[in-house]
Length: 113
Image (cartoon, rainbow, N blue to C red):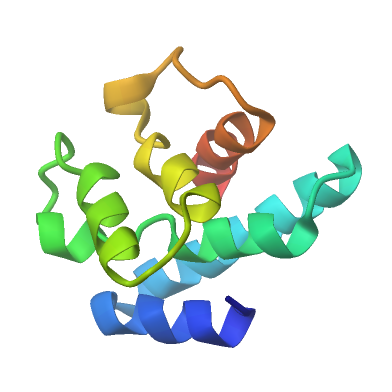
């Protein structure tokens, strides 16, 4: 998946400018963190773009946030290397359970963007 495909998929599920802006800001932070850590910048940017794909659908039911996003992504054929960090980034459900650098960085990038 490339950046344009990720943005197109995001825009199928997210229509508010503020949420789109937040996703793009999170993507920029993720890309920068990946560069600093020697990780895959493009992959981490895609994760940032798509991380809140479910936010409008869940209507602020934070107990579903991440899980619904994971379902959307998997139904769209998105691989687990992108979908799993998104599934687990909801700190309200998974705080303290982050085990990989990408999961830790996504939760952090989400909170600062």
